[in-house]
Image 1 (cartoon, rainbow, N blue to C red):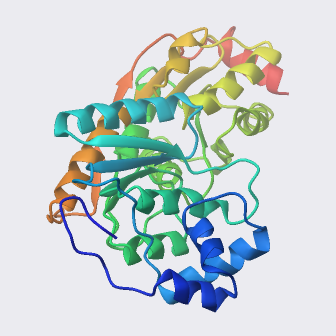
Image 2: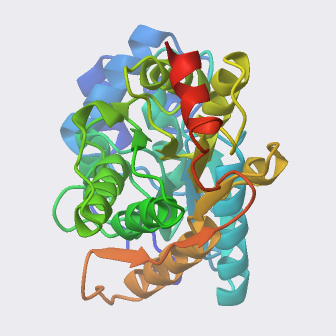
Length: 360
C-alpha cells in the first residue's frame, strides 16, 4: 500500500495475475478490488480468495498530490450511546493531532458474501494510516489481514483478550467491581448479588473478580447462587434478575455489570411490585446517558469511554510515527457516580421481607 508522504509501493502480484488465478477478466477483478456491487457472489468469492492467496495488496486511489493522513474508526454499530461517546473522544483527539477521522460500522446489512471484509478493503483503498476498532473482537483472518497490510491499529475496550502484541485500551474493570460492591457493603448490605455479561469475557471476569475481592475483604461469604451471567441485553438481564428474586433468600442489592442490563433489572423489579432502592439497591456500570434517565437515577461506575478513545488515538499516532508502546494494555481508572438507586437495606418490616415475599 502507499503510505502518506511516501512514493514506495509494496511489490506484489498484478491484477492480471489475480484475474487469471480466479478465472475472470481483469475488469471483473478490478470491480471486486474497488468494492463495486455489480459482481455475482460466486465470482466475488473466487476473486477475493485469489487476492488473499496471492497476497495482492489493494492500493489506494488518489487524485494526485500528497495523500491526506487518515485514521479509521470502526465500530460495531453507530446506534448506541456508547459508540457516541467513543466517537466524541476519538474525534476530539484526531482534531488536536491534525488527522482526518473516517467512521464506519463493521456490520453491513443485507450482504451475505464476506461482509466482514468490506470495511477492511475500504480502509486500504482510501489510504488510511491506521485504525481504531471499537468491536467485541476481530477474527483471526482479520488480524492476519491487518498484519499483512502493515496497518497499525489499536483496540478500544475489546470484549475478549486480543492476541499477544495487539495494543488495546480499556477500563479498570476489576477496580470498578470492587468500588461498586464496597459501596453496597458500606450501606449495610450483606446479601449482594452480581449480574454480569457473558462468561469468559474480559470485562465480566474482571468485574466479578472485583466483586468477590470486596466481599472477601469485608468478611462477607461468597454465595455462588448470587452470581449470574447473561447476555448484554435487557431481556436476558431481566430473566436472570427473576432467578435471583426467586431464590429462598434473595439479595437485597445487585451489582449489574452494565447500564443497559440495569434497564431490564428495573423492569423486572417494577413488575414484581418492588421499589428501587427501598426494596432493592441497584448499581450499574458504564455511566451512559440512560443511567440518568432511569427513575430513580442509577448509581453506576463510570467507564471513561471518550477518554479511552482519545488515549487509543494518541497511542495509534505514536505507532504511525514508528514508536511501539511500552505495554500492550492501557487501563483508565473508573469511579463511582452516586445517584438515587442505592440505600441501606430495608428493615424487617419493610424492604428485606418485601423482596423475600415477592420472590417467593
